[in-house]
Amino acid sequence: MRPFLTLLVCALAVASTGCGYALAGRGNSLPTGIVTIGIPPFVNQSSTPDVDRVFTTAVTQEWQSKGKYRVQPAATGVDATLKGVVMSVGLVPVTFNQSGQVTKYSIIATASIEFRELATDKVIWANPSFQVRDDYDVGGSGAAATDVNALFTQNQGALDRLAKAFARSVVTSIFEAF
Image (cartoon, rainbow, N blue to C red; front, top):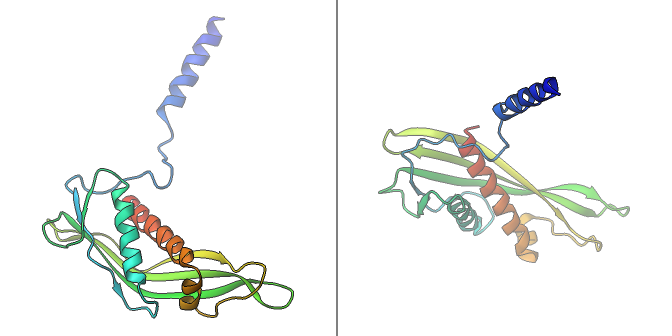
């Protein structure tokens, strides 16, 4: 019985030390001095109207969901700024029905993102061609929009879902400094 207890204690000790890995989205490599983040309105260089406003709102809400950060819409009087330029939003057909009609699109948003600590004027994270994609099922009818603006007009939920995926991916990337 005693060897069993010794083995059990050793196994628990090894298990409690962990392996050093963390789940994706749980890391935080930000400097501790960053408490207030300025997120000015994103710039829209795409042909998709209002995508800048929707993305800015989604990114702001994602930061606020982290709890320990204050978010402001200005780039002054803050510890760090997150600036974004939406360069393009497009559709790529993914699947087709037997008649050759598109049944699923992949919506791809490309943006230039920069997160900068103002005290040191140091870029903490940047990606000049950050991409996020989300699949959109057209439905059984096969009646599909031929461009992203028509798709978003037909289904505002598609833009909202893309914006949430974009925001989650941006904030996670910044936290994990990929």
